Image (cartoon, rainbow, N blue to C red; front, side, top):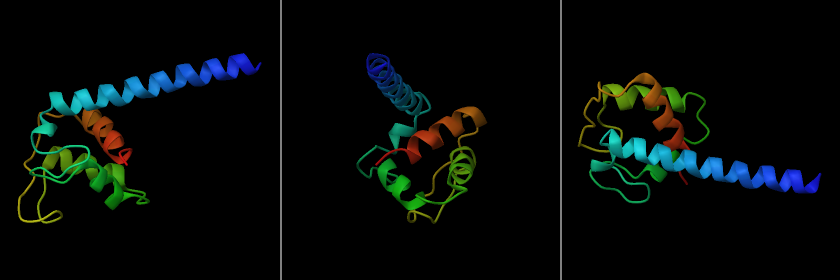
Length: 103
């Protein structure tokens, strides 16, 4: 039984790592990484800072989905985030979940 549990944990960890990698790839493919990085502020805030700001908010995912698609301004300073209508709601939701998981 212990072998099964350990094996499942290893497989689960590999899946989580692959999912995180895939979501980083999605962020690159949607051009998010042109303005954002995981750990450092570029044009926009670091994803770890976004995750910290929205931590504990029940509607954080929905807020980020809206921001990703429609853009926004004033939350992180004077530079606005442009709208990204080419990002589907499903991809925006995937990106929002990934962003909120950054620490």
